[in-house]
Amino acid sequence: MSEAVTKSESIESGGNISKEDEMKPEALKNEGPLLPENDLKQKRGKKKAAHMKLTNQLRKAVVDHKMGAVRLKKLQVAAWRDELIRIYEEVKDLHHKIHMGNYTRHSTQRITSKEENCLH
Image (cartoon, rainbow, N blue to C red; front, side, top):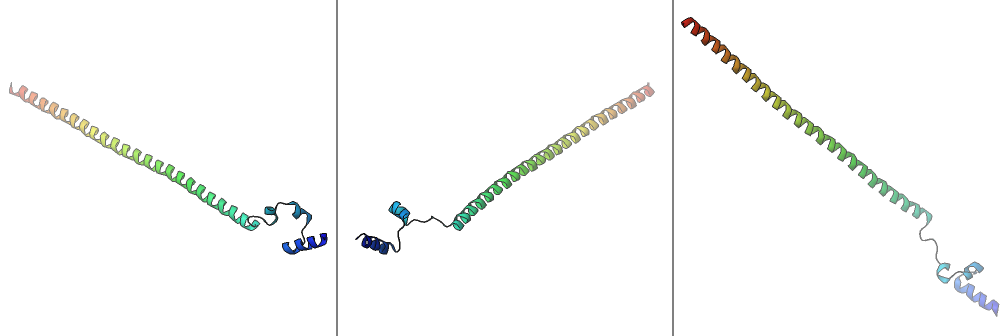
């Protein structure tokens, strides 16, 4: 009788049942790996590639930000330099006008004083 029972079990399961399979719970008997090894490697590779892509984009954004900050700083320095040059030129012109104005005043005073001396 026991032979008939084992034969019927082997026919139902589609083959011989090993002792290890008999010890396993029913859910684990038919379950294989979730994904084949190649699929797991491909999935890991895709994750790694996506991570590297994002990392590289972030690095590029940081570099661009720094370069933008450097460009902005250079533009600010150039604007300040231009403003200082403009102020310097204005001061130089004013200084020149003041000195030239004093020179013409002094020269006219000298002329008038000479004329006054001649007239007296």
